[in-house]
Image (tube, rainbow, N blue to C red):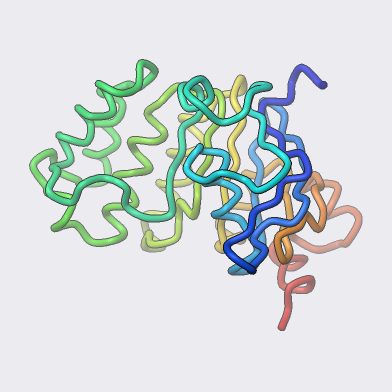
Length: 234
């Protein structure tokens, strides 16, 4: 195995009853790469990330993070942003920072507080009283305040207003380092593609292709967003 591979899937399968969510997914992501996980709704992106985070169990094949299947060790080096709020809504922002500081040895509480302040999220604010977009901003600040080796972000820009997207993108880039890999799923490709090194396209639970962004542009003459719209058009 390439020693720079930090995250890979090998013939991964997942079913929900009779519905196939993942059908033989295989790929490899190396350190130092920022990778877009792209595909239409229902293509398997969230399922893949949940299996990788240890929240779901595959029906076949495996995910390996630093050579190990999801478990205690992989969670210690993986910072995962779910697609919805995962913290108790009665918590205040300050409580969430304290929880992460207690739970993760690689968490930088000062960095998290500074990012929350930049986004005008006050420590006393309760999660349940925040808008969906503010909740997502808070969760992203917590996620990116870890010094992880792998970041898995599920729709980090989904509920964020356009005015905050540049800040969120810069937050991701500033806090992601070259010894780590970052994989994010998004539908807002135009906002993020300038930062991507590679893309993995999923279609109906399978990998359509994995390709470098520059190579894709040279091959097709299109941006990633244009290529996506052509491949997945109705």
